Length: 401
Image (cartoon, rainbow, N blue to C red; front, side, top):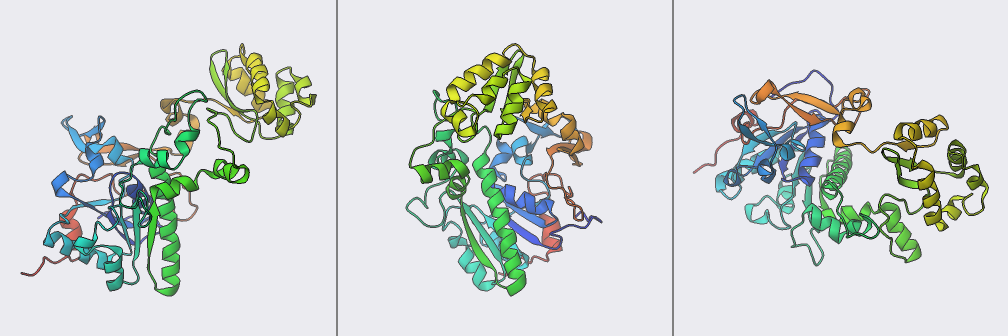
């Protein structure tokens, strides 16, 4: 195992990762980034985590052949040790129980009740190891009429309401472009695990965390959810527009689009001055944010006309000069190659000895610590590559006959 001299916030913690796909792996990758030792248990019958085969993009080996490191898998599985264990076998169950005895945290995303037959469910393990923090992630949670249904990001976005808000006003419901329900669920899981560890460290008492993709997705409906709860009116799809702030949208200009986020009346006045529309800021129909919301369509038409012949760089320069929030709409390439991304280590090169160039490019962790920085100790692992190393390090014994 790789040892780092950098102080790490979660150094010494051991995570037993029984999760796959994205939500659970997002949480365990975050814990690994913060210094925990993460043991990822993968099923030999399926050649590991499902996402290892979710191509088409794969890291290549030194000979130029695709490996089992798909881009999707690499997005959520660095700083982990991969072991091959068949949970359906007595020997595999024995191995995982021994690892659980040495772990601080268990994360799993089986269907509710799916681990009971193996004796690896939260009730069984917490009875034997009362200080364990055990986090279960599922589509709908451990209770409720839909608890037995499987959960994928797309289903969670549909069930939880976010798709009804996403897309053009006259278009169909639309999912967010990435698996945001999974990722946000993983973030909630990380927060819950850290809070449970705090409680355990004070009391010695572990606990079970029950987290659902759908619950998490509905929790981050944020202002649109509370808009509905307050008014009883269903939110509408507005494309890039904001339900509570105007103008806050993407606008066409001479050579593309720009984003405007005019957050208050003073900013609106400065924006109008910058584009020769000073009268608008004094017009009662537009002078306040409430008035602008009520007259959204008319104002959008006027702003669109004012920007139509102005190059994007000039729109941005004028807005920035008067401290009005405005920005470009980058492609992924533009975003990841921007000066800001380079200054903030948004992309990191992580050593991977069995790949072409001996490194893989990954999206960096956004957390910047002054004392316990994020470290990149392990590249996303090949399936089962650390099995023997982990079994020896944790002194795992075979099942007695």
